[in-house]
Image (cartoon, rainbow, N blue to C red; front, side):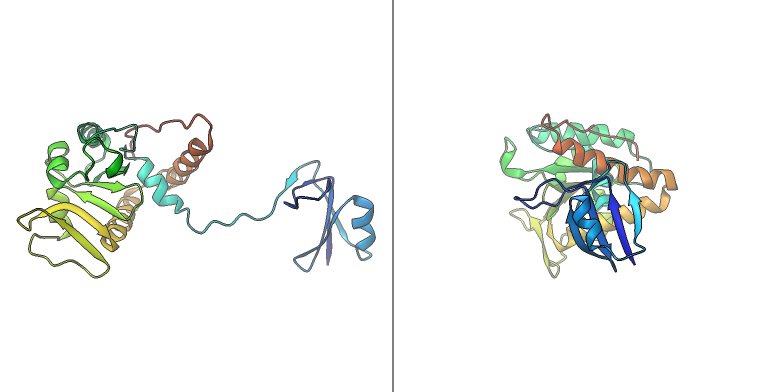
Amino acid sequence: MDVLLTDADIVTMAADAGPARSMLVRDDRIVAVGPAERVYAAAEPGARVVGLEGAAVIPGLIDAHCHLCEVGYLASGADCSQPAAPDIPAIVARLRDAAAATPEGSWVTGSGYVEYKLREGRHPTRADLDAAVPGRPAILFHTSLHACVLNTPALREAGIGDRQPDPPGGRFGRDSEGRLDGVVYEGPTFTLLWDGLRRDMQRMSAAARAGLVARAGQHFADWASPRRATRTPAATR
């Protein structure tokens, strides 16, 4: 069946395309786009006509790498990005504030740091996170999400010990004596993120879960804004 979309502002993405007000769809495929008279001429008799009253029609935008829930989850924790947190003491302070707003049973989270942008020029360590959140698990994600830092309670709860060898597809950071420094690289980072998201989502109401997606949308909107608004350091999940 033919479907005629009329009275629309159709964005074709073609550099040399003129204004397009109508579009003909046949068997889920676009047959014609352009001025109404030309598109109507291409339609079969009995075509269904849908007036859009000037609404915009754009190509389908598919991004399989947004991870909306993950973005919303991280946006609800401490913003440890730069320049918001220019050094490790600032990260410690933000995680400490986030701990006060994080419900019991949930890990304290932070994200967005880049080690080479910090004044110290290094990754934070378990000792730094222990100073920020000594009594409960805390995790700080690198902006790439290919690394993270765990405090001592988080390492313990994750079952990661000093004598444990590097896992397949990942690596544990260690100090000069071979003791874990809290930094985790690659594969285990993804597992820790997904496990934390799954664990906390199981405790959330439907409204709270919808809030994750809303926070993700706000996060992307802030990044698209010319003013690049800074997100709240800690928010209640």
